[in-house]
Length: 268
Image (cartoon, rainbow, N blue to C red):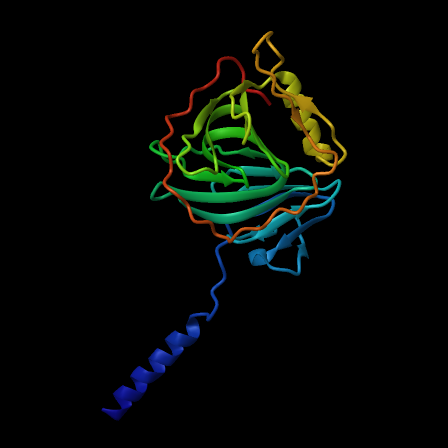
């Protein structure tokens, strides 16, 4: 009897030793491009470590691109996030289970410019890929778009697909963006046409970053009472934004219809 008890105790001890006390978080993406000085804050904590090609990222990590630097993340669901110079992005939450057809992704852009491509449509009832900024919440469905954050505004520019874009104001109904449209929050919160010139400018900013830029774009005035909404990038957008808790507390998600494919070839 004592031998059986002793054997049982040994089995329990071995089982306990086999379980790590601090199991590492799952890798949810890897650096598919690192150009210049890019650093990574594991769990959002200092000290930052230099990011290298094929390094993994986990929920809670923060990625920073310095001046003249660029980074690209390829996530486990094949989504691709490309960061321009002078940008700061957090992987707040990222769960993907292709067998169950389940994805819950939340990324938070604190400053700068990113280009995001979400290739896989997982759910049709609600967005399952969310991008948050200090002024906006963007719900994504099979989409290719730019998000540009300055100290006071967020710009969402949609190349193709569909976005649900709403200000971080309780009770405010989000607006749906369709292919080749953009919107600026918190003001004027009006859908505008995404022209080739704007796309060209955004592509340029992906290489140079926002620092030292002074671009303006928007709808031209249309006469008396017409709409005129220039968007101006500040000369120095390095103002530090308050870092919120990671992961975020998500509110109810808005329903988004299936993406509408644009006519003609997709922008590259």
